[in-house]
Structure formats: structure tokens, C-alpha cells
Image (cartoon, rainbow, N blue to C red):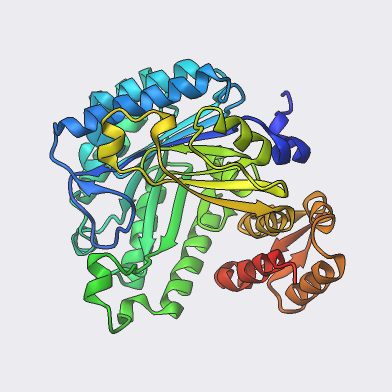
Length: 417
């Protein structure tokens, strides 16, 4: 197999195009109690969805015409609930596939209640290769407590639809949620394994401020959300999944049979990516940002010492639906120096089972004071958050469970003081 250009660190650090494309669909049938994503309850058939989708397609065309997607290897349509678009999702997918000629993986998120057999078939025809289904639990009482509007039977039907369409499938599950017990968690995992699916993401519920749960539990942390319970449930998932042949390849995702999500990996391996749609995030090299500014001249120029630029689209869904081109979008910008970008690379790599390779460590040593870098890693090794294995620094089980401690220490190297 030919080696991807994105496997070379130098190409990733100085790329003028992107390896991954993300498109955000901010529409849902209803808002879940825990959700703080950029999404809104929207009536089926609301014309704003059609106009918003058309605008995204036009923006993709702009990028393609400028050659910005020539090396794009993965695409991901997320939300929100992309499947709420119905046939409009097929049109968007087909258009992305027609201009991203190097795609080898194309994912779309889906909610069980809105994925029909016909839509699954259409998505496969439109070039989608992979569906990520937001199942969360196979226990109906737990689903209701989360504000989900599907049932376990809806989930099984959606899985069958995706399998019949010959799509790769991933399921999302939450632990440490209302109504969940140790026994029901094990049962959800067993039911997942019975589906014969090769990818799953497992994560503890996060109670965010501007959500129904955030308001409901503002003054107390519920017993079902205890940190020890979160850790125990994550360890239980790891145990059951490992026994079934799954390997955890990043902090929340497991795969077997070479079904790891390559788009997810792009986020953790310094590959530049571009997000379209309200609240969508992008990460570009300095060179890539300068090229993007030719399409979006309203953006300010990057300082000369910039190594990386992070962008978030701040334009509303209504503004985008009015037909906003790239030159009309509003962005929030963050310019990272070489030191900050190198520290971020270390932090992101520590989320993966591959860890921080010697190549990445040596690159960081050219941007970060070597004394500080060496001292930091000595401390992380001593504290049992990292271990040395196979020419890399790998997060330990403790480093995985108390990830914020590990990531915080690595991001602390961004300071040049």
C-alpha cells in the first residue's frame, strides 16, 4: 500500500491543504437533556435545513475549486442529527464525494429514529462508507432519562438498515447516566457485542452548564455520576471489549478488524482539517491558513511567528442558510506559536494508544526548552501517567483514567516562561 503523504510529520506541520473535512448539521428533532452541542430542535421539512445544506455544498465547491481538498482523505458529517435532512443528506454526501477524489473513508452520524432502510441505501449510493449511530444505551429507561427519543428496538432496526446497506457501523455509548446500574451497563455492552459491530465509542456523561441536566443538578453532583463510578464503568467496558478482540486506540474509542476511524485519528495526529457549518472547528498550518485567507479575505493575517491557526465558524445557522459564502462567514481565531503547537501535539498524541512517538518528541524538543521538556516527561513517568514502550511514550491505565491531569501537564509546556 502506498504511504500517505500525511504519514510524514513535516508534511502535516506545513501542509497547504487539509487531510480531513467536517460538515456540521445543527438540526435535531428534539434536544437531549445532556446536549450542549450547537444544535436546535427543528421541525421536519423546515426550509432552513434545505437552504443551510445548499450553502454548505456551495462552500465545498469553493474549497474544491481552489484545490483545498485535493489531498482530503476523510470526511465526516456530524451534528446535530444529519439524518434529519433525509434525501438532502444524500445530496450533500454525493457532492462531497464528487470533489474529494482521494477520500478513503466517509462517515456520517445518524440517530436511530431517523435512519430508514431507504436512507441508509441512499447514503451508501452517495459515497458514505461509515455510519456512527448515537445509541447511548440498549436500556429504554436509561434512554428516556437522557431525553433520547429512540428506543432500543429503534437502535437495532437502524443497525440492520446500515448492515443491509453494506456500511461500516460504529455505535456510541454513555456510562454513568441516570437509571444505569453495573448490571445494566454490562448488559448494554453484551448487546453491543451481539450486534457483530467492529467499532464503538464509550464515554462518561458530562454534565454541562447550559443543558437541562446542568440546570437540574446545578447544586449537586448526582450519585450516579460519581467519579469512581465513571472509572469503574470505563474499566468494565475496556474489559468486556478487550475479551471480544477490541483494542482501545484513543481515549474513548475501540475497534477490531482494522475498523478504527481514520477521521478521528486525524484530530489526534496533527493532520490539518477544515470544518464547515455553524460552530465547526478547523485546524490549519500557517501555510494552509494563508491559502484559506484567499477564499475568506475578511480574516486577519496571522502573526509572523504563527505555526498553527485554530478557527471556529461563529456564523449562525440562519446566516449560513441565507447563502453565506466563505467570504461572508465570521470566525473566531486562535494563533498558536511553534511552542504552543508542539505542546498541543504532545497533548493530543497522549489521547491515543500509540502515544507520543520519538519523532514527535524530538520535534517538540526543537520548539520547547529541552530542559523543561525532559523534566516534564521524567515527572509524568515517575507519577505513572506515561510509560516508555516501543519507541514512544504511552499513556498508562492511570493516565487514561485521569487524562485531564496528563493533558494539563503537557499543555503546560506551551508556556514560554
